[in-house]
Image (cartoon, rainbow, N blue to C red; front, side):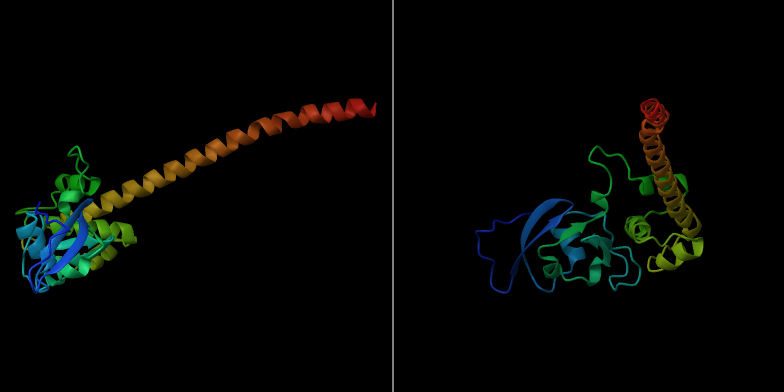
Length: 205
């Protein structure tokens, strides 16, 4: 990953820009005309983000900026100063374990040539975070900005739906566990009530 010292003065016309990529701080002297996509691929050698149409129409270059999905080919790199950029390289766990959505893409045959897959995964993560997974139609609508020339849309939709269902089941299990714990914490008080009543009766006698 290319880095420049913050103490060096950028050449005339370049803008010194600091931001983070996948949790790592980066400071580069950038031409204001450079797109974030080109900076990621050519300056930082993060080639997981793909260049498709380079016109913001195919979604292959989708990344997250402060948690929001954007097409990096239309985003000037100087505009991300002070922000957090996440690419497909920052999605898996540090030990290499795939994110559940990445694993679901594999399990559901959601890729063929795989060229659009990084952008699909990044948009899929945003779709899940934004809660647009109520129906397959919702998923297709909110993923419509990402094109797949192989036509793997059925698998892509299934993968996103699977992760949404897993998240819902996990939430329900957590709520059930919390309810059970709350019920157990109330039981001692209930068991004390008869004893308290008995003591009250004895005092009245």
